[in-house]
Amino acid sequence: MLKILVASSKGGCGKSTIATNLAAHYAQSGKNTALIDLDRQHSSLRWAQRRPEGVPGVLGLEGKGKRWAAELPPDTERVIVDSPAGAHRDELEPLMEDIDAVVVPVLPSAMDLDATVPYLKELRQIPRIRRGTVPVALVANRLKPWTNASQEAIAAMKELPFPVVAQLRDSQGYVVLTGLGKSIFDYGSESVRTHQEDWAPLLRWLKKAG
Image (cartoon, rainbow, N blue to C red):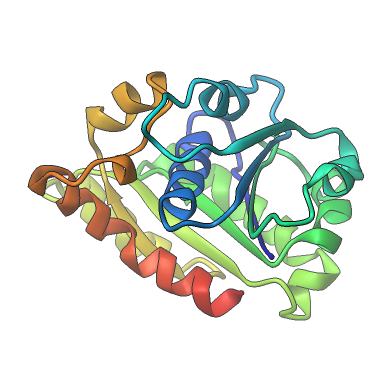
């Protein structure tokens, strides 16, 4: 069982979008997948409940502390945990006992980078992360690669203490599909596949982490 925590320094970074798309990818790959929603907005939980017929289901659970681990069916193969936005060390550290990898989305703006630096320093103080037992990956999210702002942000992210393993381009499609209980991995059109390719480095990294 591979258990992935998606965490962010603040709301609005695309944390739940990354959590739901990872869950859909694993479900489409034939894995029994659970999505644990610890965020008070419960966006991921509503997404799982909206999954339509014709796409693989994802088990959505409202996480409450460490009890979520006990609620998982024994045949669960992939678990995505959507953490509370801006959760600090005292909230995240207890979760790390049940986590194999952490994914942190970062937006390409000076304000978001300023919020991310102290957040990552705090993450590094969690013993299982500090020892390297739980690896952490950064995901540059909502990029507009043709802009100087995004290019400068990527350069700045490379100075952060954890690796930038994927760069996801901005697309209104993520917003539309989330509202339908779907993800880009539920489609096979050529235009969607180009965005799926953005995820390939992250998926390879997670495979190694597991």
